[in-house]
Length: 91
Image 1 (spheres, rainbow, N blue to C red):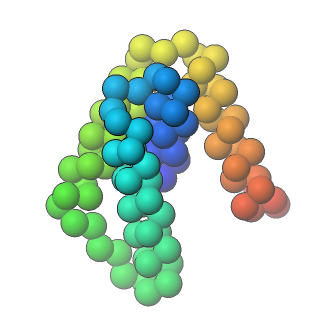
Image 2: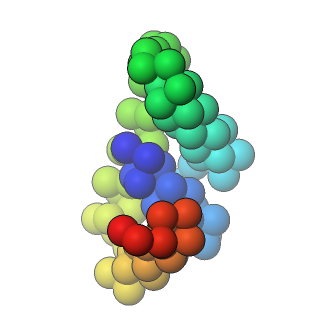
């Protein structure tokens, strides 16, 4: 899910989103906070509001995949790969 949120954010940032970038970034921050908390405590909590927001993001990503040129999606995916390689250089 984190990858989907980040890719949606990148594509929206590039001008290909129908959602407000501030909303996408808010969900992105929530995902990262949940991942950090879950990793630290072993407990995973997802509020109903978060699940609804995540559903909106997934639906937007699905729309982006259907309507955008593949080159734009690949560019966003490559950006994510570069970001991951900086954080986890041996993956």
